[in-house]
Image 1 (cartoon, rainbow, N blue to C red):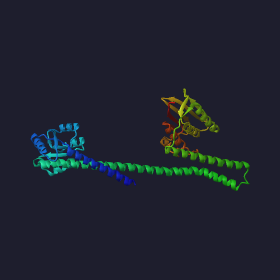
Image 2 (cartoon, one colour):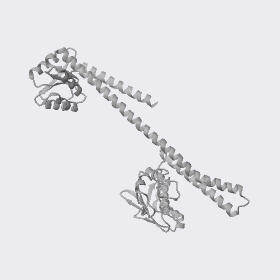
Image 3 (cartoon, one colour):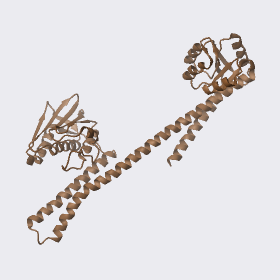
Image 4 (tube, helix red, strand yellow):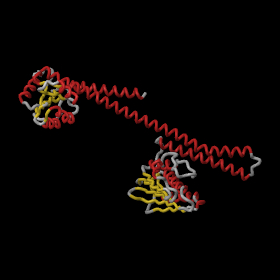
Length: 413
């Protein structure tokens, strides 16, 4: 299907170019053909101009200069349909005159004029980009007019072919990029499914094991043991539901369905509530969680749900990867029309080479060891920050800790 589409685009491009060439030819038939004659011999220049005046099929206007430099100046100021170029000029000799002209006006055909009847030189001139080669003493009205007309037609055909080739190359590059992207997406999907399957399998195994013990050993189990197994099942179900919620959130964000619904929020009160919940989770580790706000923050416009995802995930990570009895700080301030949230811990840190991958779904640093987690938290944080048109920065060193800074633009109420 993609091939057919490419072919249609190419054919359409060719038709456009052909039509354009037809329009140019109609324009030439109805309007004078502008010729730039670069010839230092005045007698030969007058003879060529006389030949062009005698033409019955076309009307020509000729601008005559005697030096290559003067010709280049004329080309900078005006457009010409063709160039007649003498190869023996006061400021340029031989085929070295061709490159400056072709660099300046690559789409304008050039007919070379010389006194030497040399087939090798003629071929070399064509290889260098000239459209035709005329020996002056052999030129008459018919030969000159035909040479100019054919040169213009050939150059237009070459330009059409070049443009079609460029279109084809561009389309091939686009399709190649699409194919590479599709392969990357398929690879990501495969890895995503594999990791999701792995992370769901653990709580499923817990449920199956606990349910099997309750079914097969019900009479042997004490009431306390039964309650413990039921708690394991509830916890596993909760973990699965949480994982599926996270995956659903990422999918929603990737599909462009994550909308930022702004409401007025008392920022300090909101953050204090999140910190209080985080302290309850950290109570068993005797972690010191310090919260501070700077300046008059007051009420701000933001999406409460997305901001909650950002702060809860970052605080939970800081607590999770800190040693017992450690410290986590959470600071908020306004600066340069931005809200800046900074969460710092003195925990295990993140290897520098892995920090760029932190926001990929399911990615976890290599030094987390047996610390539980799904690798979805920071991916969700990044999506939420992006939805606010914000920025997230990570500065971390292994063994020294991590500083995560989130910058969200302040929105006028």
